[in-house]
Length: 250
Figure 1 (cartoon, helix red, strand yellow):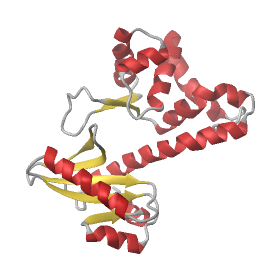
Figure 2 (spheres, rainbow, N blue to C red):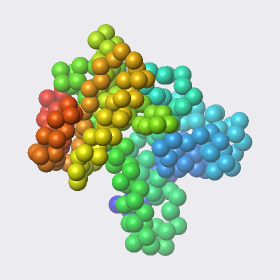
Figure 3 (tube, rainbow, N blue to C red):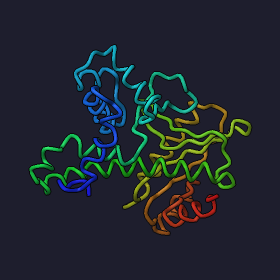
């Protein structure tokens, strides 16, 4: 539906936004393309890639965030004024469109279906991973009984990234959440990595108890779940997440 020349989704992103942006639409589109393809992106990179003055980048980003509500800025957990904020496209459809369709429109028009399918599969894997992180965050925040934390966010630094972080400031308890589309092979490598992240958080947020949870979009073998349980890592696989969605639904 995205990659055929006669499909309405091929031009849907442009049709939705070109009139809204007016004569500046090409600049806005180029900025959204840069954001869609990056985990983090600096103003300097946007200016260089798009070809605009560095001093004007903040103005464009502010309009995309506040006027058009197309992007949002995330900052590291409990650091709302941090200069390490990351921008992301809020709408999942537009993220796919600007990541895959917009930069490769000439390939679609020339019917390069095999090339486009390869590009789509490569980029969509990352998009799925980010979307799953967002979904887990929603599930956790709507299931207070299972996850009794008042504050939610993400943490990142040079040494590591934490997909989901829950925090109860009264009890000084934290939840380190790791999100995976699947778990394959020996779980010991992942266990070691999660233990390292837990140790870092305990050092950064001294005095807080840190629990660890692994969220997986696909089924996890019982033997693997037992291995994680031995290290106090609770696993929520596809079935468990479905149950949480049902129990948290209004």
